[in-house]
Image (cartoon, rainbow, N blue to C red):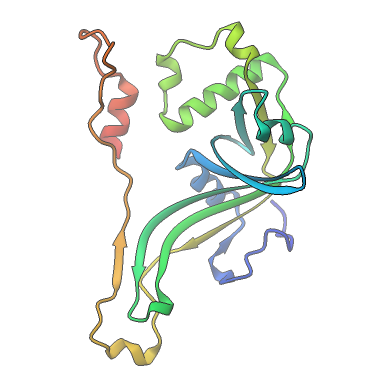
Length: 216
């Protein structure tokens, strides 16, 4: 990525801004839900959706009748945000309370994926974004399901990351106050898997689920 344009440059607390692919990709790879912002019939809309990240592209999918996908496939400008909250930052002053977080914002235009091989690969990428290797354990989409699915890709041509980490930052005079300050970490954890009521009792827990439970 080239020098950040004014569109993506972090203006508030610029030292927290990052523009390198390594940082941006790392945040994208750790998450699987994004917020997609676009203009629909002259009013702004933000919709959360699952995404898949591969190389310099973000893939989205859904029903062709989706308001979001119908708008995006026209090539209208969009913005995508992914945010991971890592902690609640409690300062001595209410004014300086904050959050520790990692976020990425992408600007671009969507392109419809038409090639059948790429369409199937995109669905695999999206599936494995949530649980790696789950695609290989599943029944793959049939022709009817593929026909009922619209797949878009957005090239990551303009993007920035913003990261806040560390302790609270209080005014110097407030450090002597008898008020607790610090960080409450927020960690993603997985609970015990709940089998489908209709699942045959002799079917074991799949390896993909074991992996995320062991690696959390």
